[in-house]
View 1 (spheres, rainbow, N blue to C red):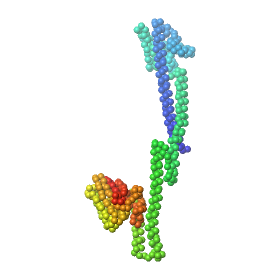
View 2 (cartoon, rainbow, N blue to C red):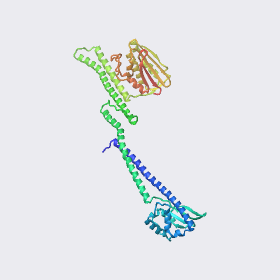
View 3 (cartoon, rainbow, N blue to C red):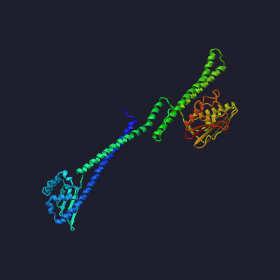
Length: 478
């Protein structure tokens, strides 16, 4: 069964919390046992200090250890005399009396490992010469001794081997209760975390589910779909990026449909003219004359130019156009391109003003044939859409880093709202452009692709002469 992201996230969070809680439980239990063991050893050291005082008083009264050695029960009473709340059980008293009677035998009967962990077996009493009176010093590696003094004379030493682990029944019961309590708390924390995490994970996954549903609609062709941005975190950024993607796809789809419609419209007009002319000739409505042939030839040329422009634009979009860049003087190419237009401009009674900087001032890494096409298209655009008797200006400015080229012409102008659309494919300003005088609306789109291929910029604005002002900026390292 495939888990949803909600439950995967829930399992991940609960597992993480569980590992943290178990780690805290184990470390807490270990730390508690060590702390309790330190506390017990400290308490036993206090008992040893009290026992030392009792032994000094005993020696002060007796002047020797003989009675203590002959009465093991007295030694056992002294061991527990410092703890009035811990009476000696009869079973324990009898067992230890028997053990202590044999402690000074050679060899002594040694206590069992479990007995050695008790306080009574870990206390060692030595006489002034260091001989053991009670206890088993040979069985312990670490014993802390306290000297016993009477009248400025060492009368013996009292030692205690520290406890390595808990053995007392009350202590073990207390540790067990604490362990159970910590376990219940750990389980409770995990359960509470699960109850709190479930709605949190649901809230966190909700935007992901919304994005998944919106993505399915987007892939099915619904480019109008948008998802609300509910946060400023990574999910919010993802949502904004999705909305941007949907908006881009919607615009691309609209542009594609408009592109297909415009191309169909562009092709329909010359084809309709050709069909009408040919059918008229077939029906003998019109006779084949040089004028008729010229009309048919003009429409074929128009179709040919349109197809060539479409192919070139498509290749440019695909990056399939080859650019053979070399170090050239662009101003010289611009001058030659303008020279080829002088006759056509004169035929339309359009004056041409040229102000070019020295061609040796700047060289560009560029494709000369593509730059020639760029300058030709810009000049052709001004020629087609400038009224007869108008004016056209071309000037350049440069520095070591870039070349700036200005194309200005006189009326008719372009509305400000249409200026950003001039470089779109098949766009025409209907008030000033017709299919008879103008082209298919692809020239400036091709210009933009050529400029961008050379890492430059192209922009259009209103000309002070009353028409259009196109500025091309080409970097020196293009």
